[in-house]
Amino acid sequence: MSQRFNIEEIPLVNLFVATDKQRRLRLSSDIIALYDLRNGNRVTLGYDHTAQVIALRLASSASDPTAANVDKRGYVSAAHFYRKTQIPQEARRYVFIADQDGWLLFEAE
View 1 (cartoon, rainbow, N blue to C red):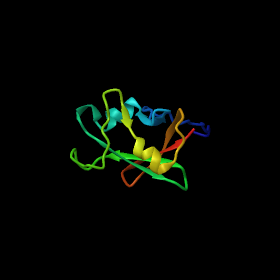
View 2 (view 1 turned 90 degrees about the horizontal axis):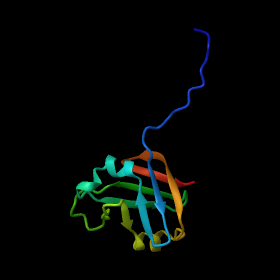
View 3 (view 1 turned 180 degrees about the horizontal axis):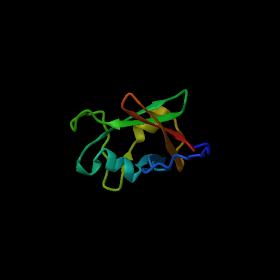
View 4 (view 1 turned 60 degrees about the vertical axis):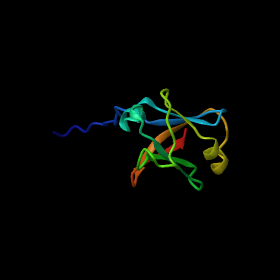
């Protein structure tokens, strides 16, 4: 076969984190399904200041005091996260760019 094809990868899930003016993070429904967050699981948040990348992973336990609760709509109340990272309190979408050491990494569009 001598014909070459330009194959474009088509992701079957849409992983993103959205920020808003109320200092919340909204997780995509695919992240909620991936981590089974409707069943009381919690997430741990991280941030890389140099790359300006939000990091997210499933908390190590449901009783982890540093982990965040996710409400039934997929929101995380993250006032402390905003203060610590100094990211702007604005509506912005961060899209999935990589998986590193168990963290999902998201970069602003």
